[in-house]
Length: 415
RNA sequence: GUGGGCGUAGCUCAAUUGGCAGAGCACUGGACUGUGGCUCCAGUGGUUGUGGGUUCAAUCCCCAUCGCCCACCCCA
Image (cartoon, rainbow, N blue to C red; front, side):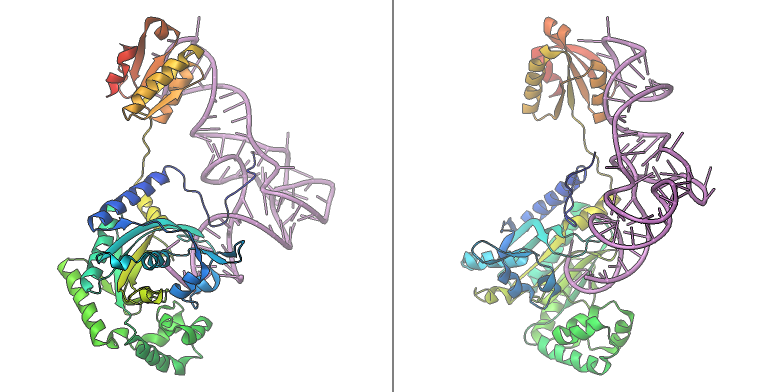
């Protein structure tokens, strides 16, 4: 046998039992997010290409070379969303949600698309679960969002992760910092890697988290953003750290952390795990106080994060084996006459919420063998004898106990 | 887009200097006319990723191509 079709590169299937783990993670998210006042929002996978250009920034690789874009039949430029925030912000502005009482809090989940070379923890179609909060500038909301993310990860079963934090300033102080960076790196430009030479022009902040050795050597004495923050940003970040301390949420400051998306202001954070390989971020986010107004809405401070489902499931799976339960009851039907009774009995049990499997064909022996391999709890046998007598034989496969019960009473055994 | 590693049964892997493609597990059935697990037996399953080349002969050597994995880049 040879498969005639295979899934596209970087767009893998997720099969049971892993799908059970996904459900567990999503359920944990829904529960926790709900407690924090977040409601689910569903936005389209398809958006105008322009939306991402304006939010993520045209200089970022995501927009420059990783978007799945095409022209539709009416000659509009369409993209498959590479991330979730832009769509949610678009919906917030489009539906005038700023007129609802602040803060407005949403969470979302679903597939995102980036045309990248796949590797560990990176796919072309990947799933994110994220949250966005609009209408509060107070650092308390930053703290609340981060505490919520931690609670979610804990509840999902993730262990051994760490939180890194930074503030990258606002439109008052960041331009000056960029200037200081350029002044610092300018004399060393020839030593930097080609990528960083490009970054020097496009986004000097990104030189700070380059992994090339000679670049990290050069930046040893580079100016720190923390020393360039304006008074408001400094206060905001200080208050946030105090709140996290009060919550005993452990974090490490990473003054070199820069997020890849242009829209971030002030707080940025990243949750990483050592078990992931090079793509070690399991969730990341930050504040984006300017994006709503850039999309035509009123000036509205906002913040959010997104977590990668594949990355979560990868490392939670490696820590805990996720079992899949077999049917509680397996109904062996022997002979063609038994099918109706088997289906009827199965339906009654299923209506009671039991997981039931009917063995439609094969000898009784082979059906029992199948029931055992599925991990069934009980078997009910319906064949010629049982139909005649009107009472069904049953057996508990776990302890070997067996008996016989009137057809109409059988469902009482398991409820 | 760039680099490295790997492609043999559903899965994990063998196959001597190039010499008839195998095992374990899984699956299906039987031994045991209607009672699972244990045991034994049998069966299904392969164009050795694909296409060329070298050779009397290629899973093995060469070239190309596709796929997967890891890393760069980027990022969840």
